Image (tube, rainbow, N blue to C red; front, side, top):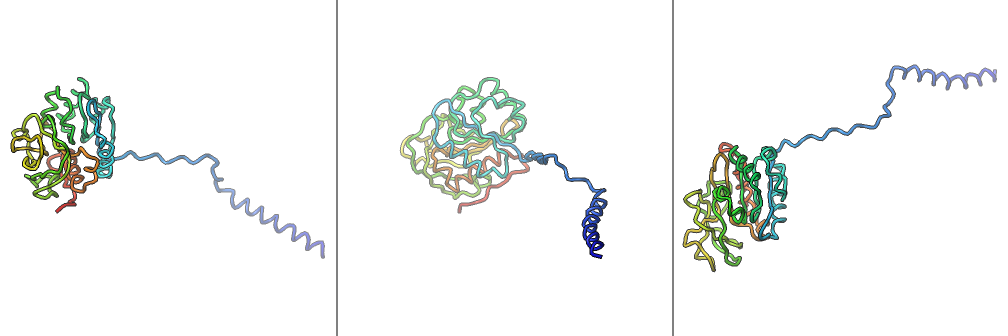
Length: 272
């Protein structure tokens, strides 16, 4: 009797194991292969080329400007910041919605790169120029027309009054009528007013030093040869890129340059 009980205790675990084997016979054993990483999705955001190459004076505010534009527009654009002029080929520029020249200076593109940029604009591409973009490519007449005016000189940085002439544009809709701020104010080789739509002008009476004879445009825009061009003379100082109103000003300008006529976007207002 005791022997019989011992056999039962021995057989029960054995039978459980056999049953488990039959129950799992139809199941696929877990894979021993390493897990495959999910493929990364390509960004569907439009692309912005942020170009800051210098061949003459170099502004120490360029890193601040790059960080500012990334912060303002990183959710709306895939931003490529570079100083490598070889990106200016027809094939590569076709990937971008807008090109921003951030305080570029001097002769920064060769002849083939210039032709590629012209084709980009003719194909509907947008251009936004900030500060020393007007001190760039003085020997390339087409670029002078695109940016609107060339830099000539400037007085010492100072606080001056800007008269906002139009608030119907995304780069000025948030600004006060009289906008006082500190910056380095450019004097241009000629007055662009007859060629562009002026958004804001300096009050020369508030500038100590060089002026433009009482009519001193400082921000403007234009539809240009199939594309769009926007320019602001502000942005010399590092502090500019921390000012809420100036940040909204450049954000609205870049958005306008990147958009077609039926998709203008307004920047949010942080001003009066």
